[in-house]
Amino acid sequence: MSTPESQTSASRAPVERPRTQNQIRASMLTDRAAGKAHWKTLIADAKLTWPQISTEELATVHGERNRLAGIVQLRCHLSREATDIQVRAFLDKHAIKA
Image (cartoon, rainbow, N blue to C red; front, side, top):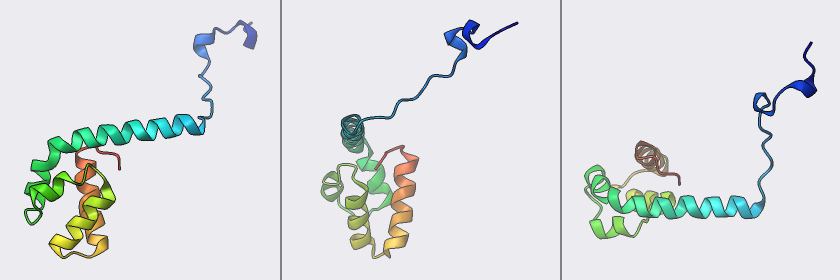
């Protein structure tokens, strides 16, 4: 007969401890830095998606969703809703967290 005490620790599900504010902040900063580094490789693809936007303007975005959405909205003359849909689809396609 098996008792809970006789079970191995491998069979138990790991207990997820709550993260501290410092851990959450560090994770966000790491994600943001990775997004900025990845953004430099995506400028050409963004230029193909939105040819009305200059490469220099795209370089200033640094992978920030709100900044990209603002530039797309201004240059492409789209509503904010349409812009958000396009930008979200572009960032999701390239697996950028913003």
